[in-house]
Image 1 (tube, rainbow, N blue to C red):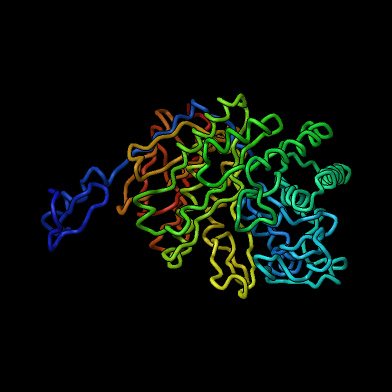
Image 2 (cartoon, rainbow, N blue to C red; image 1 turned 135 degrees about the vertical axis):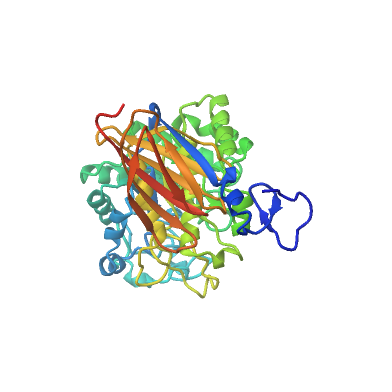
Length: 502
């Protein structure tokens, strides 16, 4: 079909894939239309080439000590949803909550610090006021069991088989000149977890310490690195197997800031944490098509800085991520959120991010403080009865990667077909995850190489249907299986190969 390179034709439609206009389908040209090469694509999976083992905790979620109240967990069966979604890690006590949190005082409001002067207690954070939806007066803090304690959190991790990722408060010690008290509190927390029989490997040292907007204390200059060094040395002496996670810079991950941080504290750091909300204030459907999530260059630069600084073994985690709010994202459907979130996860997976944690599970804030009530789409709806969303289905489909082998996988239409493949040798099962940013319904051939046979199942979340679609009984012949992939969709093809196959 001839495409017009210049201005719009009155009876034509713009083709995003070719950058021109094409005429509408008619009986005379439909054969030519459906034969267009961009309506077909091939995804090749090399089952003889393993790239790496994926962490069982790759697919995580943020909890919030003051949002995830015990009544919500019981009434709305939150653990069942986490289990259904295949969540492999839980971060606690949350994001900005971490810089206020004291584990021996779990009944304190989320954005209040029990170390602050008594006259300030009960008034909320000076910047935010009474931020949280559930607020408890100071005289009831000691008896308040509504908020999640460290023991309740660890018990839930154990019940779900999820990796615990626990935060350590550096902000209070810095703000009130009590560093030694802060270090002692951290070590007591770690001993408490160990003595209670819980194995906690990952510890993150506060949250967004550079953030002027939501932190109890803003670390300026190199002060965060100095605190990390002091806490980290004490922790590594007492708990040499602890893996420490630090978040020294903003989403743009400036090289100079990371280099300066590592010069001071690199010797005690195991992971750098970058928070990515795509793309704050600018998220729109058109923006996703034109500038999709792509963090590979930034991740490569971070790793280069680590190597140049003498710390090539430092890994990368993303302990907060999501589709950011904007004036345009308010019109997103649950299906579109799920598809873009799947796109983000594929980008993290293909760039060797070890652990990710979606922000948040629940986010219940006071309308007096945050009138806009910006939505961060999650695996449950933002209001009661907290029903499972299509993001929960996407998580369930994506959870096939946990603890599996990442295999070599490529698409011949990589501009708008993003893919990854994982293999489980024990069950002889391969799962291919695929996001289509194409406006076309495409016939995709998945090529697992010759002499393989078996059966496959396709699950899909297309934005046009607003629901999960499944197709069973797909046959694999000569190592290939073909199926139709809907426009703008997240897909999981699960393949069980016959044992006689290559």
